[in-house]
Image 1 (cartoon, chains in turn purple, brown):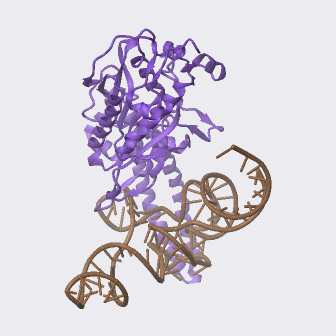
Image 2 (cartoon, chains in turn green, blue):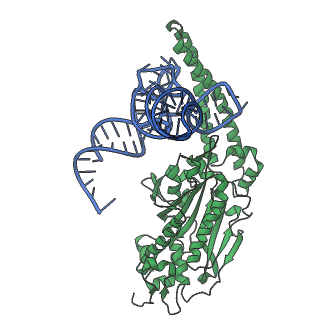
Length: 419
RNA sequence: GGAGGGAUGCCGGAGCGGCCGAACGGGACGGUCUUGAAAACCGUUGUGCGCAAGCACCCUGGGUUCGAAUCCCAGUCCCUCCGCCA
């Protein structure tokens, strides 16, 4: 949810919203609905004050005078309930519209759309394509079976098998160990949440089409554990010393991938179900820019540890999700495509989700909304894609990245017609 | 799945339909006393919106009433018992 007061008063704030993709006229509709609601709220407040006073009088009056007073109070009541109905309707309208408005883009997010992010830095040398792309290699090695998964579940599913399955677990361990070392509290989250949680995390109503629902819409499968982590401090007020509060979530993630038909259909680059380790921070507003850089640095450390060449992209305003004010993607080099492709992503949601959650921090006077941030530690299936290309050897074998060996306990998988 | 009980402020816990934003106890904070601390005593101590008057909040949403923490309905969550289960 955006800050309506700032929308009213700060032209900069409005401009930040307009730099994203917003339906024409939406902002003005919101402002109108807000003005109407505030007017009604004022009237109702005044009416209630009179009604409260009238009722109080009845209690204090001698019994003989009561019937007349009850009569007047009764009239006030009718008037009030009519006004209250209108206020309720205005509230609903404002809420409905307000939920559609995205968080303003930060000034440091570049203008433009999907391919107009700013390349912040490029790290490492880009190798030529290996003999097999990730899908072909994974199949040849018996690491991944998408054909049979299609039988069981449909397209964009995979059986991850043999050393591939062990690599999956090794990646989870590697990422979890890394972020716990940076002070993130390890958490295995629920994978199903209620609608409210989706909304408060900033995903509903805008991203509803991307989410699987379950049990007749009672519950929804997470697309990222970020959703469950954000709810960890719902309606809570932190003391300043408790911040930053950092959590490392592990969960399986589920995405419908609506609107991606025909895109990235080979292998496991884009699948409906994958495991992910995610960083999530609650922090004071004045520290969120630093926290964002910190999360990005940890992501780079993880990617570097796995020896992948990459670049960092400051995502353009028009390409930001509804909740993000700013986002850095790390794109690793995918040799078979001779292109950089997204491997991690970290966002600063500022107070957008916190406002819905009611997560605050105590201040000298009153309290303020916190800022929330999230970032990928490892999205496992996606990461396997890159490893299968970068660690594919000339003799067709697979070499395990050094940092994963403590977890896999094997260092090499030979090319196998044995499968 | 079946049967009961419950949800109040930082915590415990009271609360007749009006005198309840809420007794009492604890904690925390400030002060007196003390070389310092403890003890004792005194005081302060929820939040959001609003410039303010004021309004709202006793799990959530409805309802009854002139008036609801208190009565009614629905939901959510927790606890106990039975059944089932990795």
